[in-house]
Amino acid sequence: MIKKVVLLALFFLVLFGLGASGVYAQEETLGSLEEILFQQELGAIWPANPLKYAIRSTVGAGVPASTIVLLLLLPVVAFVIAASRHVVGLRGFGIFLPAALSVVFVALGPVIGIFLFLLIVTLSTVTRLSLRKLRIQLEYLPRMALILWSVVVGVLVLLFLSPFVTSLMLGNISIFPVLILALLAEDFTKTQIGKSAKTAISLTSETLILALMSYILLTLKTIQEFALLNPEILLLSTAIGDLLLGRYVGLRLREFWRFRKLIRN
Image (cartoon, rainbow, N blue to C red; front, top):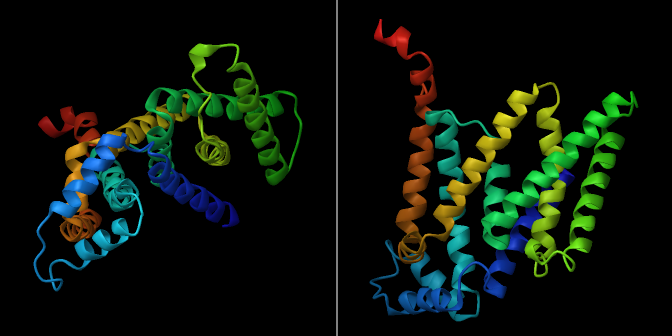
């Protein structure tokens, strides 16, 4: 529970850091978002525009528009991930991990984000398998602490090498996305325990697919503008979509493909 609170705190620090530093959007995009927001003509505050007025007041007080947009789009990201699991059949590591990874990708860029993600998954897996190979019996929490130690050491070594290997492009990395990835190593390892290597690779690949889908959603300018200008419609439609999705009990698309011969017969 404490770990989840720490992760959520880091998660929102990244969100506000993205808005404050301009990483989430280029300066001209951020300016265009604010310009579009203040150019929008608003009607009466109630019942259709309470969030629009609140957002305009908040941005006017100095909160970056990109931070507001990212927060508004997080429920949409969660819906897309849930729909991918419930309707399509992509499993991944739950909802929180792909969503957190997508924000990390926004902060670091997809190339560096995927590289660090795969590095951390590899380090945690190698450490777990090494402990098993050496027959070192540890209780769960000390084992997780050792895995986190190996992940931190690996990331530190990579950062130490970055001045000498300019192609790594790690000089301007913020600490909070890296901390999120390091703390997620426990969830990666916990999910892998008791599963075959094939299943673990499949889960990791599907998590990456979901995170990249969410990253694209978060960075599309059209979606950013719609979220900023129509927050009531966005949040209400997302909530309705969640309720409808929860009522779906049919086969997933991957199951249709898997049992296609049986269905034809």
